[in-house]
Image 1 (cartoon, rainbow, N blue to C red):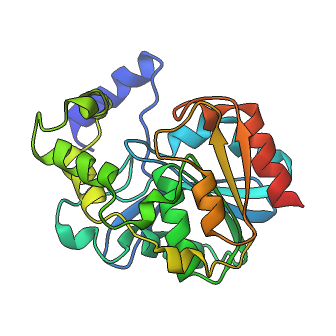
Image 2: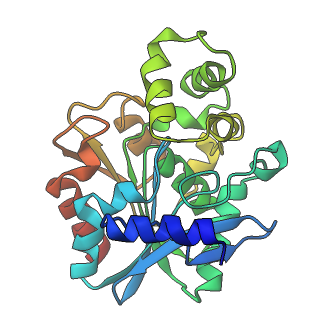
Length: 264
């Protein structure tokens, strides 16, 4: 082992710090390595995190443990470009629903079928597309989102992409950009994620035939009116919980709504 690395590891240990490990890793279709974790036993459910975020957001929220306690095997992953997963910069690494291919490939790698999906914010956008791509999905929850993402020219997506590629172009989003930089997120990757964000059309949404729950904070209008998504997906229903866009997914009420829906 490299002596310097050994010394640094020893200093971390003496200071009481633990270094994050990337394991376990799944090698996806194009060689990109995806970090994931599993917790619990039972019916599988995968949690998809939002923009400028990682799987740690789910680990800090009540939903993950609540699902484990309810008898689920919970899979969390850092979507490509985020957290402990590889962070390629090329356009090829993000186009053609690469993130969804990662999720489908991971579930096949783990041998998990008939699984549920819970996605929040951008994770909900990915969930919608996943419902059109994988017949193994049994039920789904989409949080913090409206139907607006079905528009390929969605102004919020375009504005975020411009804010990340043209500094100063959108002062109203500067706080989010500053937060991304402070948190160590790769802003080149973030721009790619907006550039190639999956689009699920209204026609595709109308054909979704698996049970779908939409959950939104009572103070959250960041991504539009969630009722518009309910109206677009036959048979879906809306549950409103306390909180704004950043806080709603961390509430006990959000966890309770998810567990109740997936266990009934």
